[in-house]
Image (cartoon, rainbow, N blue to C red; front, side):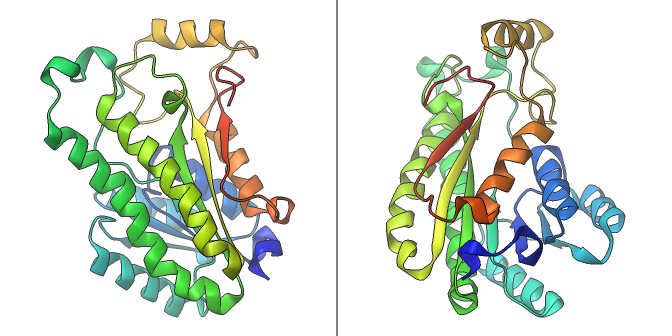
Length: 257
């Protein structure tokens, strides 16, 4: 079954894989021999450079994850290119967002449009990729869905209301999907990080915020994107074959889940 398949036998779709955390996840799975589909929406140049750097085992494909038809076409193109279906989806794509609490809407001026944009991108995108990829996973004997979350669901210390609400909903979807897909040998888990040092999304974060987080963390350091990507590999590996419906928080121990 795919649930016990070695990493180098997987075909992995990473949404939002052209830059930031997604690119680190792409490199991590490629370094362990997996074939990888680098999904992007607007980062064509970065995704193409990454694919060229990784060679024949990487394919960059554009699709807006909120567009179900485009996602299905991407999944079909990947399967045709590699000669096998996608067996792992990493739902990492995020609508445009700046992680700077000083510039985010607070409750008094928060709009439904802001929340809806995050829900459509985070939850709607994960639903689209899962629905497109699971038929191929069933045919392959199983697979992995790995959703990217946030420790703000457990410790909402900054007013990212829209982002945190969407990731909370994604955690709920992770758990309900694990029940539906478990009989097919498909595991569904979440890896949740805190502020990462540094990605495109966190580049606007003031240094004093990073320093305060490091001081409050048992490891006295802010987690890096590469360290976070290592945890994603666990859910892709055979070692997690009996784990599903879980949320692993990777933030140096700042939040105890």
